[in-house]
Image 1 (cartoon, each protein chain N blue to C red):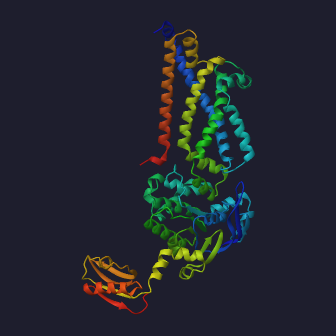
Image 2: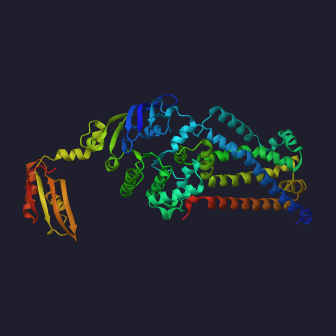
Length: 334
Length: 225
């Protein structure tokens, strides 16, 4: 368990003090995936670095498994760090070492015999699906592969905790998903507690059990992801979870809702696009469940019409003259 | 071809000069790195952005390094004669020249090493620290290996500079191509002797540069496929 108590961090520059963290209190339970989300500059990177003392907090303490780590002597601290894995946004692999030797690196630092380290590294590379790249160098790998190597490296010392600092921020959406899946598997299979720092809501959404939202050096709110997502309490929470354009779209609804049924007749026809273009009226797609069989579309879609009755009438008129099957939706659809 | 040049060639003086120049350059470079490399590491590691900031120590070492770097080699050579006498027992000849070259080059090497180490990605150093690496391990397993190509490039530049300095050896009774060019070429107005020495030095520099560049390239794992 990682307990963060009244943690504060101020950076001193020549003529001013910058508060990066102010009275942070968090408890990260064993076996969970805990997310810390915030906009850039909110202090989340500093916070995660206080967990392994890469940054020294200026006040408060971090207690890991009952031990306050601020008072640990240097040797003990290095030992502790060996048991906490960490992965980074820019992967931080040694460019002059091949994949296998990169994974061996933390074991080398811990003084593990070389043969044993190589055996373990091979196992880990198999786990992250990179066995055949073990003699490649980082510059020959894609971003996703590099992060897999970094994850294998983080697992080398059988850590109880893994800290992820924006681990997927440099990756494309597909790769992000696969890296997050890997982290989730590791959490489930090995029981490793994962702390995820991110500015992306979808990362939290995909893997975290609980989340803390950090804003302007403070924890704005904290709770189960499902609770925070459905009912954000803080202003920053609402901003992160309901991006402004989506809030606008929800407000723009309120007009009638229409269900359009695709029964396979409109093969290859861009029905909605044509409807909007020809009637010159914008609609919001509220819900859609369609699937393509061959090039024929089956399913249905609910669109929200504008409040303005004249505009709504235009849409209906267009639907009337088309061959599309539709009806006005009475019940609540979302 | 002047008689002088023919004589120098027939007596193997030129050949000897080539050997002496290479010998002095290589030995001096080796010793310059023996002292300069640790000094450079110290400068980088104790700097404000290093892994063990020690401001006072860094400033003192930095000052000493700058002090020696600001003395022109020809002046340094005569000023440091007592040091040569103390270290190799003589203030004359190639042994003394090597001492001078090391005194002049070590601070230069230190700055080169420092700047090579500065290029190492801070994220990788942080990652090593996050894995519990101590200062020595960060230096030995991260800083130096990751900076290897840059260090090799720096060493090439340092060697070429040392070779250039060695041409002034004649001032304190040293030998080599520089001394031949001055004594037999300049002082006896034999232009062809000067030019032969110049061309030979150009060739040696080209060879050092070529070997250095290749070594740096071959050792760099970032651009392979």
